[in-house]
Image (cartoon, rainbow, N blue to C red; front, top):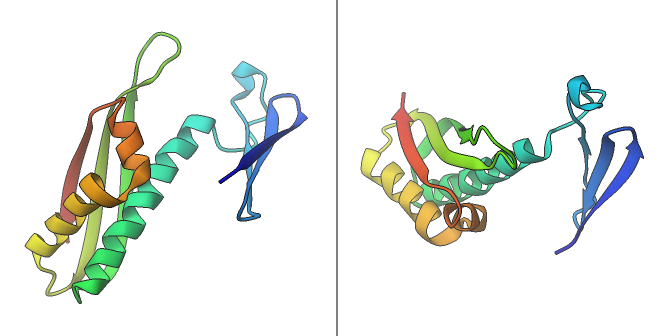
Length: 136
């Protein structure tokens, strides 16, 4: 797996990867940017949410759970001093569906966090990650 980040101008970059998709990266004007793209650390959280979300929905589909809506919210706290690393991450899974089994949902989250999601496995080595499940 490979990725490439190309400088466009100022503090603006374009990221690409083997899949061929592109993503703009940028920063706030107070840091010399044009506010024209994702911040790199934001993408880490989006990556975590996407990775675990795909796991959970796949597992729930295999368990024949009828999910009608699904959202993963990822919140990170950061250190006050540079390099301002994440100090804690909370992943919240918000689902609704028809006759969802809370046990099946909890197990899907557990399997994602302990077995399947490489983004979570890597980040968990550096920062504590907690999980919250909300079934509406």
